[in-house]
Length: 487
Image 1 (spheres, rainbow, N blue to C red):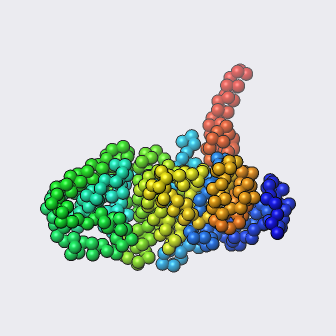
Image 2: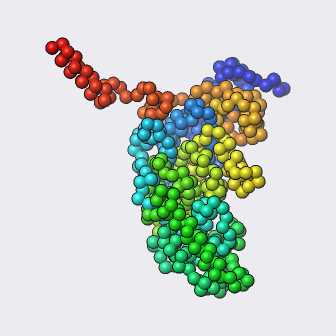
Image 3: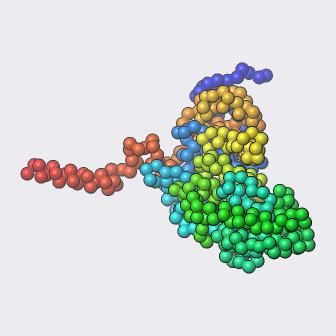
């Protein structure tokens, strides 16, 4: 028998027990809080959730409790035994991403300090080599084609793609140890008609055969890297296309990307460290988009290499984190390059799952990227459908906005409950299953990691007066003045 749709507050909902409470999703894992409907403890072990992926999307209005939740999840999860891609016991690798600060201090600085994480300021890196994390030529080709399109703002044609292919092959044959965007830019500028003629002669013989296994899952890229007899008659156009690609790389290296990509730092040592905080602040937004996309592509490449048991100069499996925490990435979804590599990483990460916690304020930051019918909109929907589970904090009381959850399979009574959630209350939800509403619990050990210089604490400071040096200096000065007045 189906009862009337329930409306009420968290307190009144608890009175309906046990008739409307769903079962526990997990009995093992770290503590999240208490079930609002049963009062029982709620645990989470993100690597074994009954879902198609371990990506967790955290949604909610401002001041609903997202940041506090994310800061407590990481230290609690670090206590479990981790394994590497070969099944051997290892230490948990966690990657934190700092994207915003209040009053000059990173929002996750207390968490980073408490974990003794290695903090790496990407804007002060001395120059990042975008090719430093790749071994396969096809990966470098694909990254370069997408970077050039990102810089130029659109597809530049097959001639540009093929020119990049020829240049990368030259670079990897003759300058593999120093391969970088700056080296590739110079190679592109020095390509001649003879280089394309030579490519055509060996094309059918071995080039595509050599890359057959790498290109079988990338038909678009494969088609871009072929050249016909008719096209060979205008090989000079390929030389011009190479100059166009070189100009785009020059803009990336020396233009409005903040000189971030003109160095030789591969980030391998940083990403393979056990606990790392990447500081994205002060990095130009366009540089953030490119770097974030390339890092996701590097993780995808590392997963493929590990799965195929390929060996390289470096063990790239070490750049795959066990835990990733990221926030405020909505703007990057305007980039086709970012959407492509995000979707690819999400699909491949099922082989070696990362507990990937990604927070957005509103789901539309992801789902409404691009225009209707565009490639980026299709990729955005693919990314959303690939989310394994959601932690949903308080939502706006807007019918059109809430309808999205109904379309994803949440019942109407549960949807209507979302705008009524209080501070720190959320729904743990796997699509097409009943959500589990819980009150997130902040433990006494969490206070040191959730404190922040946020706008809400701008009128007070959690530091005790006796430990506040500025206060002590002022008090000493005031006491000195009082003594002088008495005299």
